Length: 73
Image 1 (cartoon, one colour):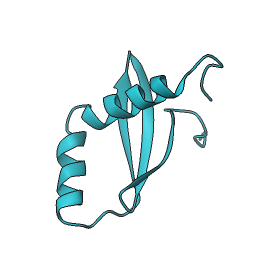
Image 2 (spheres, helix red, strand yellow):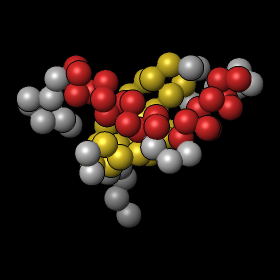
Image 3 (cartoon, rainbow, N blue to C red):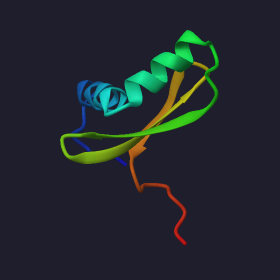
């Protein structure tokens, strides 16, 4: 799902970019503060590409390019 040359540093940057995208930091912080983390997917961009980051119980469970592994109508 990622280009073969993608490094762990690249992945960490993408995660940080998605977390910081628009209102995501506010929503994530509110859930952490209220200790009510349920499974939630966040969409965001990194270097012009869109990604989906899934967090469950306060941990990142997956990250992938948006549109990858999505059901088509």
